[in-house]
Image (cartoon, rainbow, N blue to C red):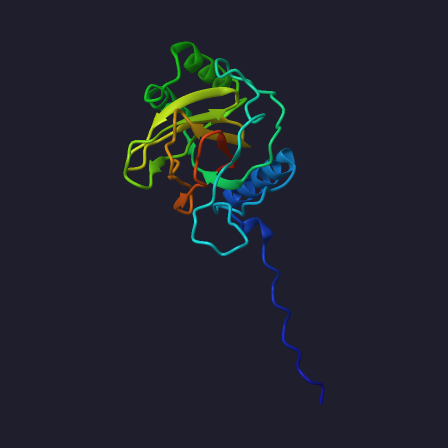
Length: 212
């Protein structure tokens, strides 16, 4: 008697994967390749020391991270520093761009440059809310694509609007004297709030950004 064979299971359709996930993966790869690989930090985590100490990680020394003068949008600036960490951020719809940019410290001319590049589809706008972990009022400078904006942090997350390509680097530094204990800031990425390396005098944080 001939044994019965079970019919083969149908193959899964690969097209069922969400398109947004493919975009995130492609953007993440682009960010890592453009920056020359990850720095000593891991994906979405602050830089950790190997000693197991409870002392918060400290940002890398500043110098060479900024390629622009902070006055004009720079679309083709070379990437000089490897990111200390990676961050996935939501994209702001073009319809909200004007209103969101008005909440930033960008000048009228800088806002016009951003909107023009956005209209040409050369960039997108991302939202990276930041906050002061200690509940203080720290002030930081955030640079993206050559433009620098000054952000006053507080206990509650505050939207930081970034002009960026689908993937790229964002640099954060103290706007003034960070004090003896430094600035303990955090950022809200797609998975949730994430503590950043401590900013002390003459240091900066480079975040490899992927826009979702």
